Image 1 (cartoon, helix red, strand yellow):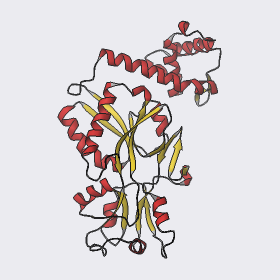
Image 2 (image 1 turned 120 degrees about the vertical axis):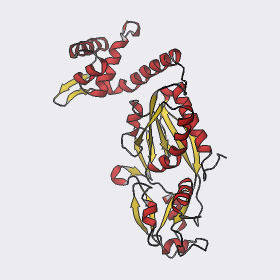
Image 3 (image 1 turned 180 degrees about the vertical axis):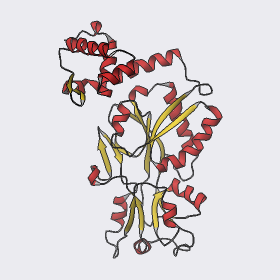
Length: 331
């Protein structure tokens, strides 16, 4: 049995760096150590653990099954220690801090949140920078595990125990179309939706591993179909004519340009429809079938639960979301 009292924690820092970099050279550069020091540290750790942890191959340092098994909890422990020391030595002060946050979000979330959130940052935290990464990347959960993404925003159907979540907002869906659309003066019915081609947004299908509209990776299930497809199909089960999903695109921001000419309709979240109506003069119509509100959640790693900077970030984003048009309060 391994004696933790005798284990040098610096060896775990070396292990974590090599695990992420898959290279003794890159790990040594990251840790400001010589390659020889990193190699000796790995040898000492292997001796302490009595287990092989890396195998040197032509592609670099390949982790063993044992290394994969211990890497996530060890990284979480190291990050918890680092966070605790940072909190004790340097309380988070938004007005004077200089740092960046990495947030994973799609173009819809960025469009409705970032303009308002940027104004908040300008007023109370001018030294805080944002880096937005696409939440559509297949390694989203891994990037959160590695600490490369501070916060992810989206709709998720499963969240592993190592991650935390908090409601950002509730939203439903509506139709948008150009002004002077043939249906401008009427209430939309199922026949109208069957008569005019639709635009829908999908971030990945079965070829990317999507199941029931969600892509699952490392225990995190993130939404891939950005509209309520089951509700749409259920509404038209007994209808004589079916809707035609004429254009399926991987992002929302192309929709206004696509609607400029022709009689297409698009299904979008209500907060985005409010933005499109204001910025592009699009019409907003209620769907002719029932839509249950969906959650848009904040997701982060548990090691950041009590980190003052992360707590501040989550609080500010929730405050901004409360002011958005087209959102709902949780019942």
